[in-house]
Length: 306
Image (tube, rainbow, N blue to C red):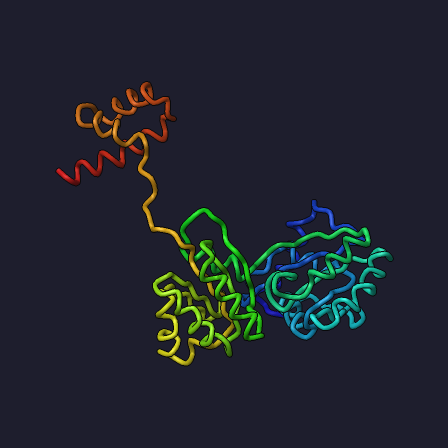
């Protein structure tokens, strides 16, 4: 057990002591994508109390749990991966029917999102059993939050492109014509090929994230036609799993000016901040705190320009 987590199990149990963890339930548990400290207390407690753990790779999950001081007997481990998910689902449902708590995990991140688990969850719902998400890290939202994507049109999550050349080409053409932000996942041995294909997007911004949350994490934003040359600049840049964000087709415009700026600017040229705010509130009906904060900002700008 990692000494850093010696008190984590106690803290986790205390943090969720008032919460319900029903029996005959499948818990979909998100796990760290690299940094062990990104586990949630609720996830740790869930893993410690579940009767069975359905894992993409039992070896990976055993090592993960060992880090947190969670030890499970040999008969609690179930292997659920892309090649056996349909076949093992009835076995898991049978265990739920006996009242078991079962945790579903992938090797890293959130199950069912470009990882096994979606079919099992579908079958569990169809069988009438409860599914409870235990949210946590996702490489998708991790990079999206640090990408500076502009626009309110949402995003399309594509995940891994097809390995079939014709289908992959169709997907890439669709991405090129898609005005919304598009999020892709890519393996290291295909990242250079993807960069070459994306170069056709010209100056459209692309954010690349590799080794997210790990020691050698890198996040860069470049025009699409510069990604290939960036990768070529250092062999290490092609290592690790990648999240790729193709930014939305949108003009970069600054936030709209506050509608009360003009009237406050006029008032401040004749009155004090306090007097300007009082009169502006009467005229506009806007909240006093909002007007006061804006008046201070404008007053400082006027002083700076004088």
